[in-house]
Amino acid sequence: MDARTALRADCSRCVGLCCVAPAFVASADFALTKPAGTPCPNLGADHRCGIHDRLRRSGFPGCAVFDCFGAGQHVVALTLGGADVVPSSAQRRTLHAALDPARAVMEVLHHLEECAALVTADASDTSDTSGDPATGGLAAEVRAERDRVRALLDLPVERLTAVDVDGLRRRVGPLLGRVSAAVRGGVPRGRPPRGTGPYADLAGADLTGADMRGADLRGALLVGADLRGADLDRADLLGADLRGADVRGARLAAALFLTRPQLAAARGDARTTVPAVHERPDHWR
Image (cartoon, rainbow, N blue to C red; front, side):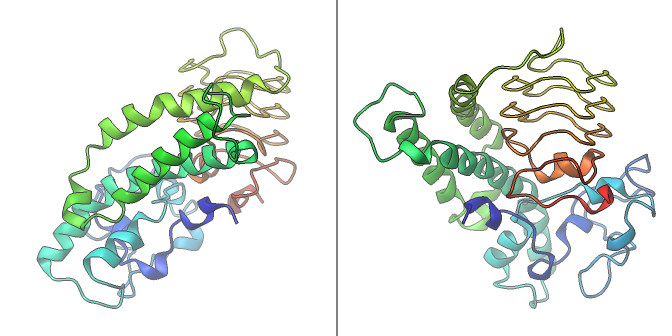
């Protein structure tokens, strides 16, 4: 089983942290303004969202795309032992402070688990340290970093809250980049349109049917881009902004570092292929 399947929200084991801890500002993403630490009026006494099945129709697409990667239930277990315990005021403050750093750690772990899956096939040979994914060197480095990040989740909640998230991302980012480059180097490259690349501004771009196999789209701005029928096999989508992107019929099954929030932010259909570890967003139907 892919280890990433465990890194997803389980609201039944949480106390509605994402409906309380963050601030909302009335906008296209949220139908109301809510200060941090104040429960959303749609949150019920059972810690569940009363409009979860109609978030988009009710003006809360920002909630529909949110995923804590399992951070909510993790900090609840660390702080309370379980979601059936009523937290004190001090415990609520601890939970709210811990949600964002825990989510960041678990998102980094999600990417490292993907790296581990990508290099697993040849990980048994640890004698070669050349850094190629077909050798054990890069695989061993990925496993070691993954284990270091996993260990952060064993920390007491106060220490987890104090994790230097930016420093963690700076440390892990180059390793993700090396895995990406090695994996993309092992597949036929497409012919991405001019201007395509890391952190490129492709907002609203017409990329219909584009052959972007193996493209580096890390951090690219793809808001509202037309990607219908595009081939993104082994394209690196780490941190790419896919809000409102039209991915109907696009090939995303083997895209690298694609997350559930990115898929939920885009517009796809039954023809869009997605990684096996993710579900097709409900609104694509």
